[in-house]
Length: 363
Picture (cartoon, rainbow, N blue to C red):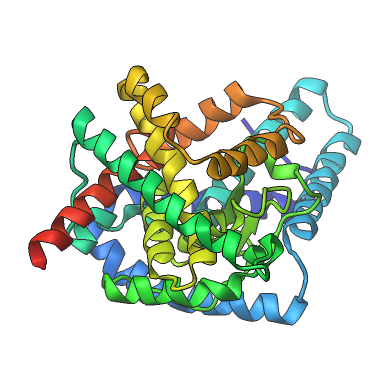
């Protein structure tokens, strides 16, 4: 079948995009993890990351919306060029369909080269020499009880320090250096100097069921400013971890916990530990609802007030498509080797337990 796309230029771009994306996907499938880590994660990616940092410094603006608008205009123009040519409707639809496939595969290739190949490197567990451990109900109960005591002691700082301001928690300069230090200490690469970006409009990401996301096409770690201030530090470190090439969601949470522990200021550590407490309670609830209800009663009243404030703030931005979002993103994570899907976020609990056990043995 001879298919003329209307302009030779668009036709050649579509073919090139398709072939580029196809070859890129084959590389992701066929190249072993050791080689990807050496050639891409430790070789090419640091240069790409530094280049993206220079792009951000040059433009000085949030690039997500300009990029999205540009892509929409390009696609609209391509469709318009196909429609305006006198051809049967079936042929026009075929051309649009083939062009869409070429576009999507080409974008997959760009995604892989800009960041996605990090999924193909050796696992985070292998890189740091740590395997998550399974936990019994009794062990979980002990971890939750210890975390409640820690939150109680950290919260006393807020009561005794009149200068403590929730708004200060959103200033990433307080904890960004700690993330680089943590990555260095565990032997992980930390290329470039990524900056977190407030995703506007406020609440946009929350309504899509997420607090933040790393955009590999712009290299931006996006955080929704609609979050309660007590949530911002943990989410920001999570997204910055992605910028440094960490792909596993539980690993990014694990790094946020370690960053929180490395912060000397109790007021700045508190939000990290509060978020980790929520992950602990989520896992305990899935294991033993009775134990969950019992330990929840042990939470100090002031900590409960913070948790209630977080929930109340979340009600301002209801999730529009919760089931669809979970299905799409869970499937995406599984396709990238995170077999737990959305459950990979909760692996932070098992990783922290393994880390604490290893630290105890070493000391």
